[in-house]
Image (tube, rainbow, N blue to C red; front, side, top):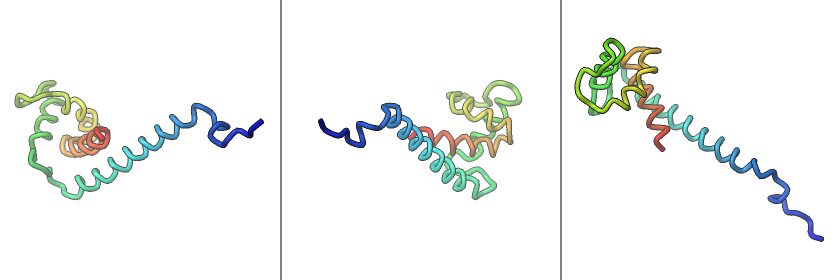
Length: 102
């Protein structure tokens, strides 16, 4: 009779849990680093500039977008903008959304 190896003695559910925790850790680190990059300036950053805060403010006040655009990103950012303000909500949504994409 052979002794079971250490891998055979581990429960079967342990590997998926470890992988899920590692992925969640990487997402959290990525969101944290991106948030610090985006919050370094009090003004909107990037090529879109004020477009996202304008769209978020319009979505929160009227329920529809100010300018024609695909609404999925704005609906994703809307809870963050409702909890803070449109500018911070856009930055926070970009940080979390960018981390989740990876």
